Amino acid sequence: MSSLSQIVPVRDVRQLGINLNHWYVIARSDEVTNKPLGVTLWHQAIALYRDKEGQIHALEDRCPHRQVKLSHGQVIGNELECAYHGWRFNHHGECASVPYLAENQKIPNCTIRRYPVKEQDGFIWLFPGDGEPSVEPLGLPEWDHLNYIASVAIINCQAHYSYLIENLMDMYHGHLHEDLQAWAEAELQDIKESSDRVDAHYQAQSYYKIDKIWSISQLFFPALRRLHPEPLDVSYIYPHWMSTLGKDFKIYCLLCPINETQTKAYLIHFTSLNAFWRLHKLPIWFRRFIKDSLFGAAQKFLDGLVVKDVQMIEEEQQAYLQNPQRRNYELNRALVSVQRLMKNQAS
Image (cartoon, rainbow, N blue to C red; front, side, top):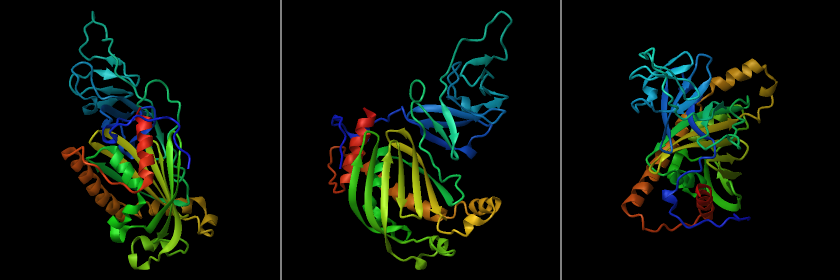
């Protein structure tokens, strides 16, 4: 097992900020229309909108005139109009017009921040750092791949993002999920660390095997599940998370930390159809129809996991707030690596 070469100062992980020089997911693509959407990423209020060509833009959610939220306004052509006095701003964040400007007055030289933003793999990615991005967003190649069925759950938890990441990296907590758990008897085999990721390899017993045409019914009928050994790999690819269970399932968690005690995230579950070789010979339009028709097939399973995990994560946060000096007793060494990475990135 390799280790981080940089010495990280000892700090309280529950007080860490985020490394702004990464891409974060702030919305689903279908959430953003020509009606402005207000979101928050680590204390920064942001207004998202589409212009008349359908392009996504992200501006600081603040009208410099009276400091009210621009997301309360509307999109006029390619400009974002403030609801209060009708001042309009272009996608560069520059004031473009004021409806009551007198002939002897100039347009105010006021500019609000513009954020780099990308629409990719069904999500809106935003770069909150300074300057131009030198990194790319984490890709979701399965999103458009015809052999993968997606389900998406939104996580809203009143807790620091570190609790969510630790929960996702700790495969020993399957005990919590009872009938909903996808794996059992997880055993940590190996950990690898670098400056921007931690990979933990577990060996586990999976309840699912997608190898027959009726296999997907296992998602709905627990009695059809049979335990069998599968590798279980989880990765914290800062600032997001990814997991694979055997060849059948892949899960991503795309983070949007809001502040020190509030985190939003998107959990995306992919079920593989790679084992069905006959399906691959069918016309593309029909395979696309199957993919779209089965979207959300694992929704109940995913939502059930989220509800239980959020309850535990929020209890952890509350316990910390009541007594931040109280010590935890941790036996999973993967979490030590994860905390080290968080501290290194936040510094």
